[in-house]
Length: 219
Image 1 (cartoon, rainbow, N blue to C red):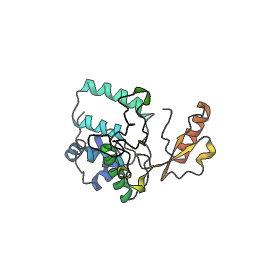
Image 2 (image 1 turned 45 degrees about the horizontal axis):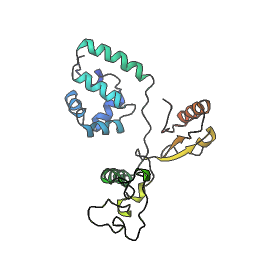
Image 3 (image 1 turned 90 degrees about the horizontal axis):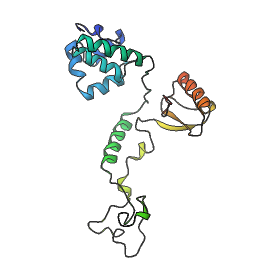
Image 4 (image 1 turned 60 degrees about the vertical axis):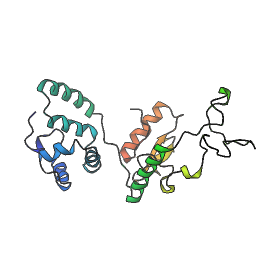
């Protein structure tokens, strides 16, 4: 596939071209460089209306000039998936919240695994955390070469505590009526594990009508 202009790309609209221009991407060469930059790809998914990761992948393949045979096969598979694919709703977050979510991710990545005292010595104890209480416990006294203990200093920013990684506040629902009080701009729902398939389908259908994101969809 030969791409001479942005409008030659699959799935792109006039609004997308305008949005790309506002991001400083006005030519095919600019877009070709942008789709290879992970940060730019994230920005495009956030800002471009109706564009998700699969569309960006299509653009990247088209810009790389895949051969005709593989392109035909890829387009056939992708088009079948596109009918079912929908861009997931994103929350409206302040700059402070976005920054704190990034900080929380860094803190979580370097947080050690807290394991029970002498979990390695007695298998019957298991690894689940229990605070050491013995008066002679070297772990309790935090001597050298002892495992780390749970401490408040390992916690993330308080303002984003208990938020989903996407930034949504999670709300548990067990029926369709539970969706009526949900704010789709800041909240996402998680369907209870005891909900049957028939009721789950009804909840998902109503959530799509209200524009509410479901964190544990069936498909």
